[in-house]
Length: 392
Ligand code: KIV
Ligand code: ZN
Image 1 (tube, helix red, strand yellow):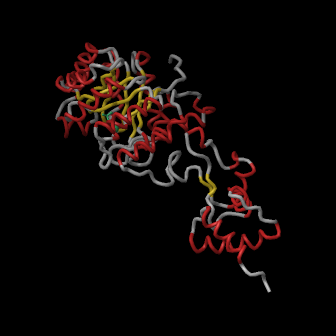
Image 2 (spheres, rainbow, N blue to C red):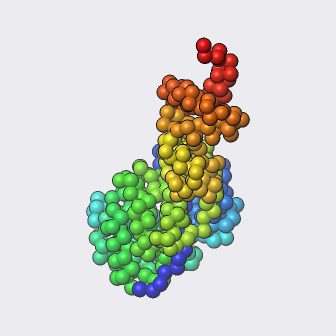
Image 3 (cartoon, rainbow, N blue to C red):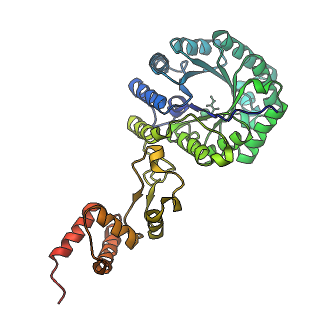
């Protein structure tokens, strides 16, 4: 096998697969604003839409292709001439366009959805890739439901589309069914058995139906995939796509293991997540990795004590590296004296050590009553102490 580049391309499909999901639709202005942010995030490819599905998608792809600089701009098309034409037309002004054509290959899809035999699938895939290559030299092919396709047939399709000119072959786990060890073995098998595989970038596109999208994407990178398709906040069909921020930060934090880099400007991650929430109204769960409100918050006393002494005790990433404001020590009933004293000092109080026992008891009582304790509650607590009559 030939040696692999140590750079993994990040293909963002927030505006296509992400936008396809209920509750995440975006208008033209929102898509453009998000695409500009994705350029600041320095993703390699933005999949801007699926022009054949609607006039809105066509307009959005056209506007992004015209106005957004930096990443390659991709548009999706089924393996039918009208789709390819619509996608190419929408990409007309892109300095670096990519045509992404797809066709389902699994037995289930062949039999029930497409009613096509294997031979017909191969013919359509090859003809469509060749038609796309007449327009641009950057063509991606996706065998939809690839992870559930018979491996020998999948290998045959991949080989034939590379011969026809595909420069990226994307293996989708369309229904989020595969598992990391299985997906890794599939990617290794394709690398070992497909003639000409070294002439294309292997990409993966994982859905999260069993919560495995990121794990499967990372397993594929370990097996030699060099493009990962993902979305900001993990939005996408059903349970979503692999989350961009999790894939990128896992590769970065465990560079010792994966030995690859992405070109992503990680300090733009939080801004991207917040902008998407603002545009779609789809809020991020509080404990979501990397971008959830709790991702860098510590409440347990032992953890707070550790972080105050040395942040690496309980933090594997620095909040500033993903553009988050900073680690947050949330004061509540699990917090300890160290964290309480530290916060009191930060907001201007300097309690004597002798006072701390009593302040700590009052603090715990309050936390039991109201839960999370903010700076205003602490100030009120300290104020009450000042006016409290001296003990008789
Ligand atoms: O999930 C899927 O298979 C897709 C393809 C179009 C890549 O979104
Ligand atoms: Zn998908």
